[in-house]
Length: 451
Ligand SMILES: [Fe+2]
Image 1 (cartoon, helix red, strand yellow):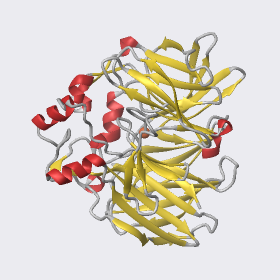
Image 2 (image 1 turned 90 degrees about the vertical axis):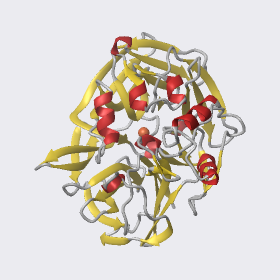
Image 3 (image 1 turned 120 degrees about the vertical axis):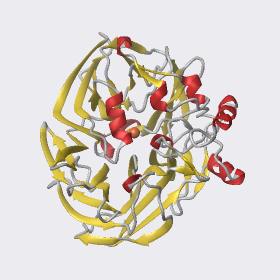
Image 4 (image 1 turned 180 degrees about the vertical axis):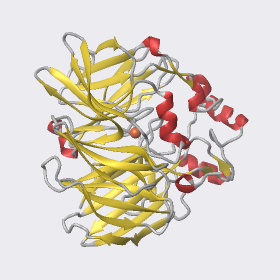
């Protein structure tokens, strides 16, 4: 039985006032949206794997000193289909035969549980194995799944990256078919979205994030071989069907945005990345900052299997010389952290400041800290002992990289309630907490939408 934060959401609601503790900054105005597997059952059947939990959104609105919060499970097409049938129809909650049938039909449940982004006035909930789900930003009810008029035929990863100078959002989708490949997409602020191209993969694998710079899209392919056929047929959980094969090495794939057919790819020693902070170009080199893992499983299980935030990896900078095909890594921190982010308007440009979440054991309990790394100097704020902080979404105040607020969603196990912590990023001091009167399960990622 699930306990603490892992329990499913018990209360869905519209925008209700939240209890505020501390002093809220007057100029914080907008809405924080967060996405996660808020429900771990389908029509009474348990979903054992958290990454396949049913997605839901949490919204917290800051408007003229009044703070309200909303929470909603996303009723995607497959969720409605299960409700109509009165039983679970999809892996991993459904019986094996039902999994086989839906797998053979090529059907998959879009659980929309990983990220939520604003996109041209809309709100999209994202799940890397499926297409974006359009959500009403006011009611948090699902509108529809979208292919963008056929531009996204299969999948759209949960980690699109915006390149500010190109005024466009970029993303990829892993298509784990018989001939696995990666689709690449460009969604400009103005003009039509388009598929930029395809990159074939030599084996079925798991790619969670990438980077986009003014001229390039860059993917790091970890040596994780997925037993795709068994996965599609629901014949085992992800952790049993993903194999770390370090002898393959990792692959670096660089795609020029303006000549996507001229792909450069080469192998480097094995490592894994879940999340990038940002990428940029300087002196004909590409740089990518990310949390580095020298293995996969230990960290993955710690990240998703326990009542904790991810312990993470050291923040690391990759330097890529595309012409020479060289690649080197420099660890920027010793401390392990995860969910690295930068100021949203820095996307694709050189950044000075990265924020991330870390965790240490203290007197037998876990203590989360939110870190600011700026010009090699770490400043952090410690959450209360035992409180569990999610990714800290950045709400900018100005264009300056570190002026704004970090807004992690935090679970207090003693109160069994969750709150948004408001951390001012210049001082890295917590200014206020905005409390829900109930718990909110783990959320993976979120976005700030300024008023
Ligand atoms: Fe992620």
